[in-house]
Length: 125
Image (cartoon, rainbow, N blue to C red; front, side):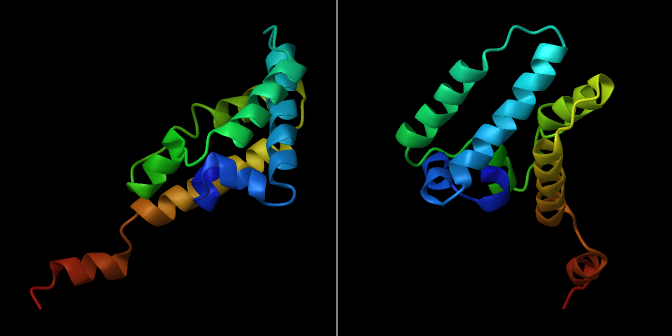
């Protein structure tokens, strides 16, 4: 969410519905982890996420830092893997998939050189 919005972790919690969306994504990830045989604790994971939102003022997660620096992100290895595993187990990961797609679009818009930009870069004038 930070990579898409440009918000720091604490700013996500400042917006109505922001923390709720984070916790819904946590629910999806936990469901996929448990279906994959990983002993993941939903209550503990949600508490950790809520604690980060409440106490990590100004923190910019690595994926946001990548976006800001126009670097490729690790979205496919993190959220993309959750979506893929969810499909394998028949678990819907609607929010995680949407966030993954939005990060890829954001990443593309920050790192891709468009044809008009290539032409401008090649011109000596």
